[in-house]
Image (tube, rainbow, N blue to C red; front, side, top):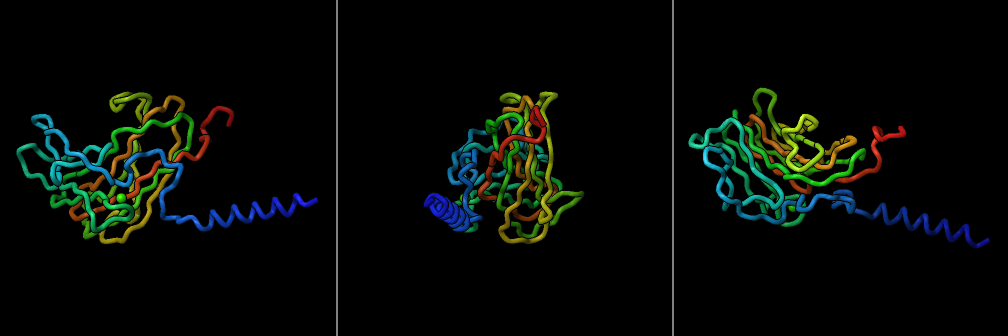
Length: 222
Ligand SMILES: [Ca+2]
């Protein structure tokens, strides 16, 4: 009859370990490499005729691409993307998007990550903002795109969704922002886009994570 106290102790130990885990630290279930923006690599020149944000030393975080809307290649580029080793939430760097042009949209986009169909994922990112003034519904906006195969963006089955955190303008300290999404029957790829949209000011992102949380409610059998 000594088994019951043994089970109880294990249970208490388990709860203790959970309570000690740092809730702002990384989640072990995260499937996204370099979501902490720790490693950066120089990019080749952009294709002719395509505008690109200013990049510090032409570098981007590995696995991410830069984009700009509302700019001509030979016109004013008001978006700058850089690593920040001073203002960061975890590790050695965050990624910073600065805008001096309120009609442009600057983005750091995850290329693609493999995901499972009929699965619920939590997308979580830490954000900080300084002096963000937005126009025409802009500010900090996050997007997800998912679809069946590599390069699916133009596919009719591609699913696009946008999320606007309540702290998407003004000045705010590091805070986590998260949402969940459920993949469909044929979803195999997911992209996450971090935007500073039609705004001036600066936003920092760090510790972007994509965390699988089990079967989606839309799975067969529900
Ligand atoms: Ca980091």
